[in-house]
Length: 326
Ligand SMILES: NC(=O)c1ccc[n+]([C@@H]2O[C@H](COP(=O)([O-])OP(=O)(O)OC[C@H]3O[C@@H](n4cnc5c(N)ncnc54)[C@H](O)[C@@H]3O)[C@@H](O)[C@H]2O)c1
Image (cartoon, rainbow, N blue to C red; front, side, top):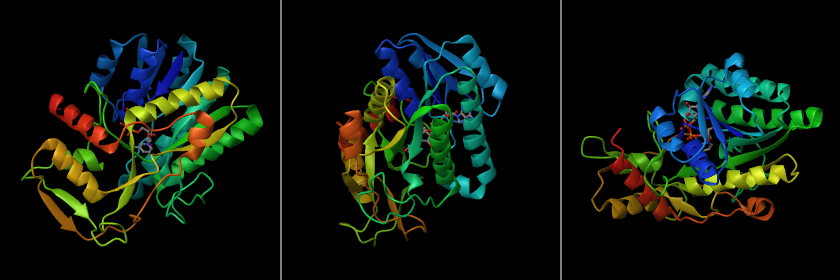
């Protein structure tokens, strides 16, 4: 049985759906602080799914999930992940992401579960010193959110040396899209991510584009957008890697192909078939011009590669927004 923390959230729910479709038994452990009970209900029809509502900050609650379930491995998505909020309220982030993870690790060690796939992020690198960013790029996060993820990666390495605890840290770039059935997708409140914000813009809430004079092909920021179902598949490959005796390691998950904000905007207009109201503002501090993953390591070692392009991701995100009027 696989325990998925944060499985009621955006990326976690896509992995849970894939695991269930592959016949795996899954337990979701989620506080529902940013995840949704509606998502869990949808997932239940795909197979043997248990749901535990609990908070990683409470050791007894996470121990309880291990006491009553025979867990073989953990995929750890649960975290707070809004960069700006982590700057204004670092306590919330260090307490939730790090203390929560330490409790999870305590329970795992107590119940002798020593395999984890961990949701890390491109934010562990900070300002890029070269592009594309490979896994050996210096790690200098520029916000508390990135610090929490880097600290957890380091904790996981130390737990391997001391306790033989094997983990894979997956450093996602920008997750995008929704599932092909338009049942689950991106549902953050507030929504800080680019594609839902473009798709949801209207005459009352225009889309705000920050920075059009970057040194890029069209002056807007370039990012690496990776489809959420492709991401889910990478977690399956990471679990297989650990089951086959793989060592603790980290992998970038991105396409290695950048798209500018203008390009994303144009694809959204094409998919939606309307003119989307747009306002242009000066660049924000701390937004690098280009962030691009080098993804060869995941291809080589995990046998994973992205398959879905950006237009497909925008189409699925759009289908999800029209079929889910939350
Ligand atoms: N979305 C992205 O583009 C992106 C990029 C890089 C990394 N990540 C990481 O991927 C993971 C998932 O991101 P997401 O976009 O799906 O976020 P999300 O907010 O949709 O999902 C996170 C889930 O974790 C749960 N959770 C948070 N703290 C918890 C706690 N203490 N105990 C129990 N449950 C808790 C939330 O209720 C939610 O369901 C996060 O760790 C995030 O940092 C996301």
